[in-house]
Length: 70
Image (cartoon, rainbow, N blue to C red; front, side, top):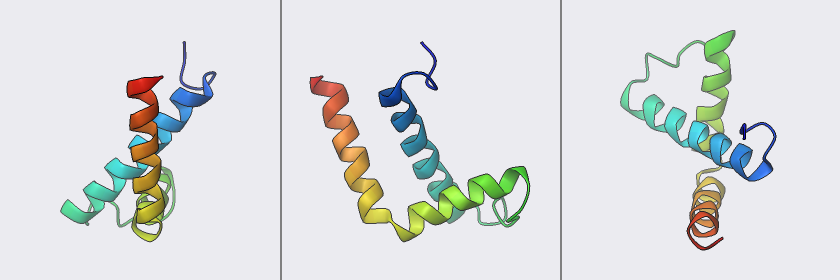
């Protein structure tokens, strides 16, 4: 089943994109300098990961627990 049709999978993909973009922006800041266009989407995801890091971490933890036990 596609991640677009299953809400649980969609949330997992969104959290992974946010965490990956934040990690890449910290390690290689030149990759995500462009704020418009296709790379702008990933810049925004990295910004969400930087600004809301405690909420993203809570979401990752909750998603991990739900994947393991449910």
